[in-house]
Image (cartoon, rainbow, N blue to C red):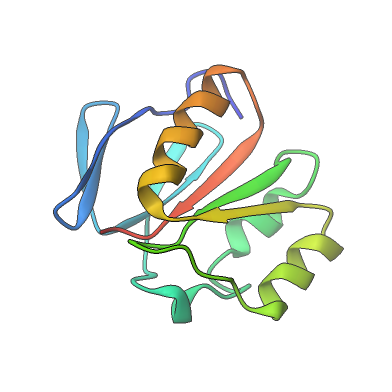
Length: 119
């Protein structure tokens, strides 16, 4: 992850505040860029939805930090196996916990992607 990865300043009300800017809806953070992510619940977490992460590859991304919404939920086997076969790890947890851990890990310079479902 780039050293200038956006910090997650706040979450809730259906979006996030990243590095001072409001982002409505879910977000996908890859390298130093946050983009809107069309996923609104766990049924939308697919390999297609994670295509930008897969395209970046294991050389760019150690693992995906998946924020699953208000409650922790297990991603589909397809997603778990697809990321594993690509050499990319997966950590999943509720979105509030994922937001806190994302800030900690990026401050350490870790190369992670964050896929966060808005709450």
